[in-house]
Length: 162
Ligand SMILES: [Zn+2]
Image (cartoon, helix red, strand yellow):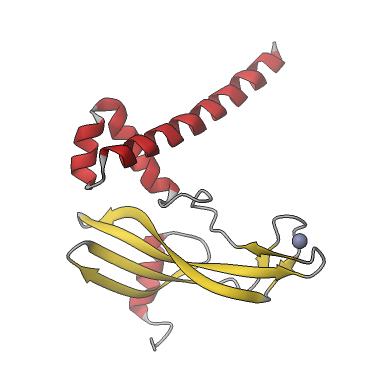
């Protein structure tokens, strides 16, 4: 396969700036750039009890939209490992911290879509990003809900000081 570690991979990993992730492959087609990621951590921690396990039961991957690179739409092919937790006797799916569970975008991409919507329109952002109106609206609503949740927590904390 790929000779590793190469100098190029090192630079791509640094540019990617996601913990535990390495760029295994870089492809380009008419839709843009696809970076196939590998995970550097062998074990994953069970979300239920925190036990570290490297008993991988199943490997699949999902396509996640990330920030554009050199003006080209960029997708990450992210490994999703199903891991067995022996003490808990159940399987769990490992998930990267920079991607909200079940979302097809990285957090930084969602933030990048969210901010311009506030100063322009959903139509303009949808054209610029090549996303449908509904998708941009979905990102906006998701980010807006997260922001409200954070603001709410902050105002509760501020009230606590009074
Ligand atoms: Zn567990």
